[in-house]
Length: 251
Image 1 (cartoon, one colour):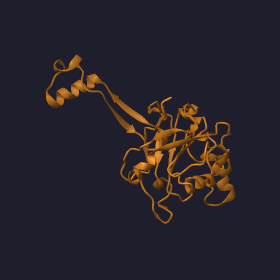
Image 2 (tube, rainbow, N blue to C red):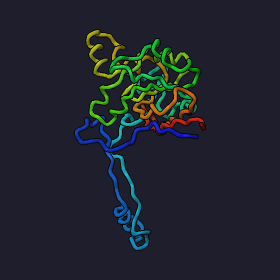
Image 3 (cartoon, rainbow, N blue to C red):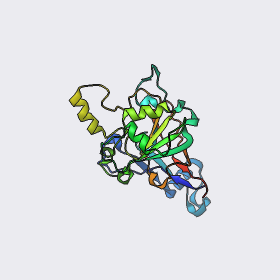
């Protein structure tokens, strides 16, 4: 079965990135590994293949939202529909392996959020319970650019509710966030003075998960594939990184 990788590569970010957005990795090579083995176990390099020990890598900074990741309802609010919101480790596994559908939205401008009517028009078929809906915006082309978070059309709260009512529990996008860019929502929220304008799709009081920062959705057909998007089991987490892979049928 052909596999399509939809996950961003995790790599260290430039020092000028804001702390909240920056990933830092400390790499330790084989020579350092050999020295550590000698210090810990008294086994010198002459007893190791090619004189090399283990290479290891340490995340010194990695936010759970800083790469391709799955959001839990706890990320949105402390309570959802009147009950404590679930963290990432409490979500059912069957949410994260299911048929996928792709909504083509690369023609939409930044901030031109998809409505329920747009979803109806652009989906290859009406979703059924547990389908995973992915929105292709093409903004993964900018995933390592400083203005990545300011790009993408986003999805409205109305469209999100409609998908949820059809039984969809996981929705994904190849942009920084499921909502339209936050600076645009912030402008409208300040102008209106109303709660619920900013971060509207996230905070629409629904127990669902988002996959954000996907890549390579253009390699997928509109339907007819399975999606595996299991998040790491982080106790109490608002989100967790995931290796998201589409499984296509044999041709």
